[in-house]
Amino acid sequence: MIKIKELESLTRALAMLSGGLDSILAAKLIKDQGIEVIGITYKSYFFNEENARRMVKQIDIPLEVVDFSEEHFELVKNPKHGYGKNMNPCIDCHAMMMRYSGELLKKFEADFIITGEVINQRPMSQNAGALNTVKKESGFSDKILRPLCAKLLPPTEMEESGLVDREKLMNINGRSRKVQIELAEKWNIKDYPSPAGGCKLTEPGYSKRLRDLLDNNDEVTPRDMELLRYGRRFRISRNTVIISARTKDESDLIKPILNSSDTGFIVDKYTGSMVVLVGEATEEGIKLAAAIAARYSKGKDEEKVTVRYGNVTKPYNGIIMVTPATDKELEQYMI
Image 1: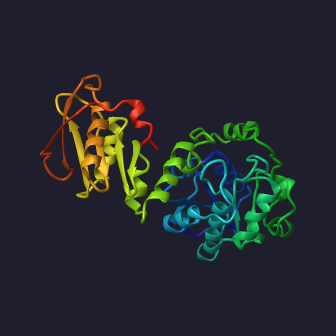
Image 2: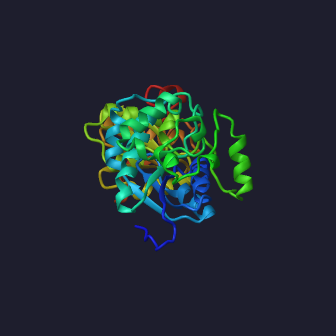
Image 3: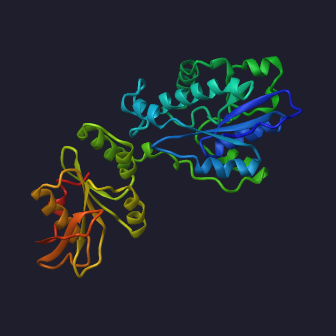
C-alpha cells in the first residue's frame, strides 16, 4: 500500500503501468503537465510487478501493486473476446485492468486513468475497434486517456474540461518505436524491457503447456501454475507430469515448490538434470521418469544406468536400472 502525500496540484491521475516503455512515457507526458501521477500495476500468475518497480523510479512516481491472480486466471480460461496469437486474451485483460483501475479512482481521489496504448501498434488488441471495446467494457470509458495517441482519437472529457492540455499530447500510430525511443532518450529513461517481454501468455511454448495443464488436470492449483514456468514437461497421464530442469538455476527455482506428493530422481555416478514426477507415481511412471533422468545426464550414452528415486522430502531409497530414453521415444510425451 502506498501513502499519498499532500500535494498542491488539483489534478491527479492513475497510470496503468505494464512495466514497458509506452506506459511509463504516457505517465511522464501527463506528469509534465503538472498533474500528480500514481502508477498502478497488476500481478497475476502470468506477469509480475518487477519491471514496473524499475520504471517508476526513473520518473519518480509512487506505485500501487494489485494482485488479481485468481480473477485473471478465470478470465484466461474463457475470455469473452478470445485469444491473440497464443493464449493471451489481451482485450479482456486490458478491460479488466481498466475496471480495477477505475474502482481505485475514488480510493486515491484521482480524476482519470492513463494508459500507454498506441493505436495500431498491435493488430488485434490495439486497433481502433479493440480500443473502443476495452473502454466500453471497463465501465469507466469517460475516465480513460491514452496520451501517446490521443490526437488520433476523439477528445476526452479530461481534455474538453481543461484538466489536460490536448496540444501537449501525441499522435503516435503503428508499430514503429522510433518516437518512443526518442522520448526515452530525451527524458533519460534508459532501463526498459523489450516490447515482447512481460506476459507469459504471449509465449508459444508456455501457452502450449498451459493449455495442456487446463485440459488434463481436474483442479489447477497455484502450485501447478508456479511449476508451469520451469523445465521440460512430459505428460504421462491425466493429472501426472514429469518435469526435467534445464539448468541449475531452474532446479533451484523448482525445489522450493515441491512437496511430499512429488517423487524425485537422481542418476548414480553421473551428473545431470533434476527430474521430478508430479502426480501418481505408478510403476510405469517411475520407469519413464528414471529413463528421462538418464537421458538428461552425463550417462545418456550408456547402455544402462542406475537411478535412485523417492519422495522429495525423504532420502531416495528406491533404485532402478534403466536404459536412457531416446529423443524419439520422448516425442510422444513432451509438451
